[in-house]
Image (cartoon, rainbow, N blue to C red; front, side, top):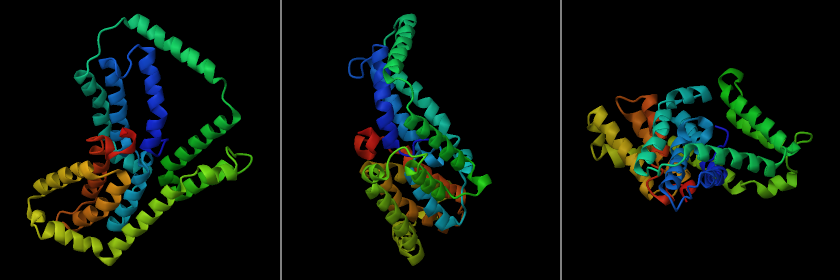
Length: 296
């Protein structure tokens, strides 16, 4: 919930994971233990993207489409409540990967001692927290608190994001200068997401998605199937679309608005079924390396 990009989380935790494998003597390419740790870390990062609203930027994009179709806003805490069962799946991943790549037995006492010493040495190299790091930590806590409490404060998540951007460069809270922020910010991504939301809204209002719905599902009589059968087929199609999708944004823009419109038009339409559609974004993102950036 703190890092709103699975690519960024991958960038943060890959070196951490590598450090752990080195500390216990399980190099990623040299042992089953190293493989298990790296695969588990990769899969948990990908599958964990829908756990909280702020775990992935395209969750907010998908939510914008959801609100357009169903006219229901889901708060941060409501999203957490609906997605809680996903934690069971995420919790099982390390056990499954460990069975597939069972590491060799080792001296647990010596291993634990090595890990502890590695952590102590690494913390000494890092040194004490700088003032910028302390400000960044405080900003993280503030932003996440406002995200979590949106159902009580009634502060829009978009405003929270804008506030965070301002505080990053506003003295005395500033972490970077305005010039540094302008150079480092991913403005292309920001504009891309804004454009994608606009395209989704236009498509919903002009009837483009309805026409696609008729072409893809109604004309093929798939929607005439029994509810359970149709839902299962729909979820399987959405999951395996990741095999030809280059990433979350492409998947969200191409499929979520159309599929939500389909669900809305069904006789057994339900906002919960629409929410299930959104969850398919994270389920199929680890089939191939190119399905999402952190896989690479």
